[in-house]
Image: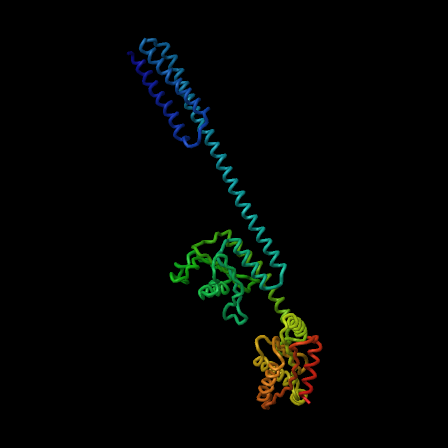
Length: 436
């Protein structure tokens, strides 16, 4: 065979390999992408054409038709280039398809993320509206804990408020979703972490409590991860929001940012509720003695009289007057009189029961409301107060000023229940009867 035929045969072999390689490459790269039947038929048609041309070329080579061989070689070269080009086109089309799928998936992911963030922001907005809408501290903190749990799925959420002396924490609210008990309040290490948050004014996140030096491996089973976020009002930290998880958990940056924003806004609501609570307490409290004032007394007495009537339980009222108070006040001055009133208020607090309401009625008169107490029990308590006062004195400017008190008692056990004003009048009559 002439050398030119050998070269053409070798070229045919190479082109055949290229064609087969292009088809195999196309199949291998896209075998998992569910190629349509049209792509397969097109690839098979070109493959069959390549085989047919190769066989025809070999037959013509064996017959020695050199010119036709050159013609067929050019056709074969064209066919090989066409098949290879189509395979690259298929690749480009499928790559574009994959790119579109990736972009669609990314769009779906972004939409889902935007929807999730929108839901979180809506929940945050609703929470803030609820917090602003109430001035009751207990409700504010309960709403804050509930919303925090809904936002991040914490197993236990609580709010800790520093005590007025700043020597510890007052546990206020705990919301536990999966825990039968409320142990979040019992571990002093959580309080220690919260105290650090108060001092630093920054959140503290612990992903794995057993491996943390502040907690160690001896942590209870319900404490695996936690976060503590300061409730800041300007530079002041007025409380700490804590989240506890039963499994190791790292709060994402977005979650931390969301909780920090929630804590900052909640601090405003907590502060307003505290101001309201303080104002309410001041409105019900006598500023000199710290006892309940006349306004609070009227509210409580009305409520207790109605409760006594509803439950058919006794109620008693004790009216108390300091003997010779005007004499001491004129002799030693008004400041000494204030000291006497405060000292006697402390004595009454010591003698009263938890269920009793001790009131500064006005001037040097005091009242004790005694629910579920009959007249005999009230008389016994009155004698105890008289006895305690008889051994009591106040030192002023080197002088011991004796304290003496007259006590009148009125009560109801059965029959027609008197109106609150009638009960007060009866106790007042008994007081002056005892004084005279």
